[in-house]
Image (cartoon, rainbow, N blue to C red; front, side):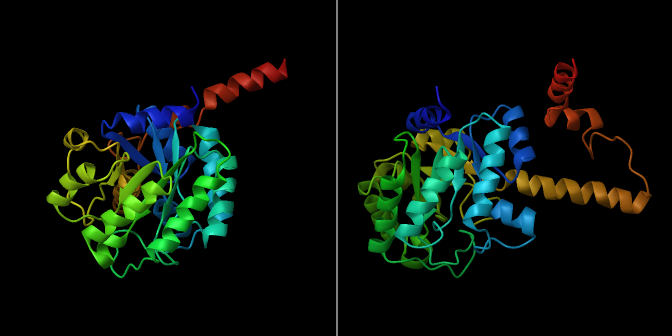
Length: 287
């Protein structure tokens, strides 16, 4: 079964599948190695880790496509790609979908913010008109070459226009052909409970550590009917915490040994990047 068909089946099961966010190929390898069933290429993670910048629309399409292709080559898991606003209007969205589909995305997420977008849990977000947002989702649906490629439609309207307006937008996105719906940054437990009852398509909910949405266990979210439970920033925040911890010890003690509470072993690092397989290739071609 293709990764796109796998993802479609996982989403339609509505069992609250945990999906961590990756920010590069090695983080994707770790996610796969730990037994997760899908991963999410997060725009914020790439912007933070590659550029040292906040999630405010600094990543370009072809940078995103390059990262997508690298991760697609590194892992076999279904891959959801965060394409932000689609890098422009409906015509740009059409081009974005074609580029990311070729790069190996199994699902492409598009949102309705005014460009340059902001992280969904930042203040000051604004959204485009409902009609323009719907047109962009239609363009995305029309652009895909493989009918198994999923379109994930996100709305950030809750912050600017309220929960009911966000629900209405999500309905319109569903009618436009979106496969998965994502109402970002809901703020109450009641809203979390309401969403699966009021929207027909499978849904993603984003658990942002330190964000605006209350953290709820994935099993409870599965019981409510959510398809995907996203922890977009868990790997990123864990990586930063780990770097700070290890480097603080180095700064204070002037040395750092192979302490498993601080760093992975040299051999573990080589295993994760596939060195044994490359060693085997080297022997094969040498003979």
